[in-house]
Image 1 (cartoon, rainbow, N blue to C red):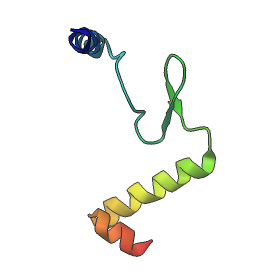
Image 2 (cartoon, rainbow, N blue to C red):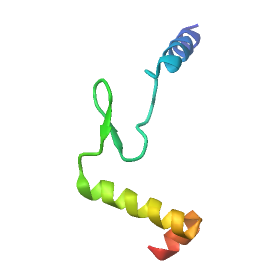
Image 3 (tube, helix red, strand yellow):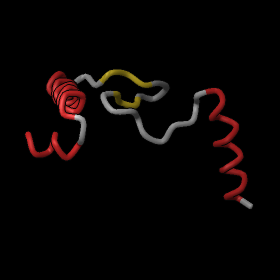
Image 4 (cartoon, rainbow, N blue to C red):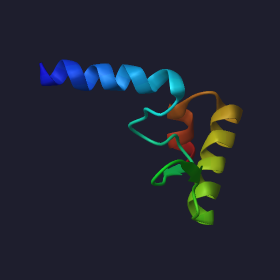
Length: 66
């Protein structure tokens, strides 16, 4: 019963964009919203990983290059 009510609440929030469990890469979750990662080094590392992925085409190749 309780689990069903929790699931209904999640489904109710989802269309409004209010339900999320994890922040997307390069974002941090604040009390009421998402914001860009404040750490410049962390943002730069993510940028490098995605650039390498676009260049090499696979995560395995990115890991080997690292």
